[in-house]
Image (cartoon, rainbow, N blue to C red):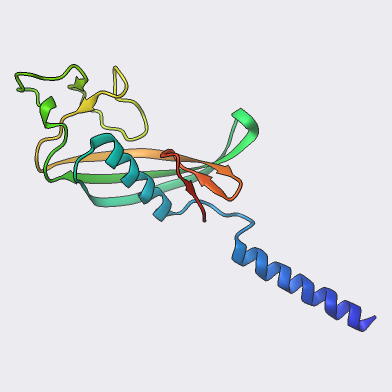
Length: 155
């Protein structure tokens, strides 16, 4: 009887250690995941060299997504991004041959379409810095969390 209890106790300790190291319970996306999402979205949206000068997570929150009853996690952040060479220079307000997909909107967002028409390109002057104050929503999937950039991140 004592041997059975000892084996059961050893099995419980092993299971607890495995669960802790495998991160089965209470795993969340990290600041590093959020920074990777920001980098991916900046590269996609502006297609120009950039440097994230400052990044700060301001708040996090769990939430349930109504569609498909998926668990979600939000990371709110503030970032300042420098564009040493500028971005979308052909969209400069003074440009004589300005393409139709340019916008004068000064609302910069990585996750929401710019107003009034989504997917319009925004001008950033060389050496210009832009501030982003947004939230990133991650959806829990088997094996990780899908970020707003479409990448699956594993905690």
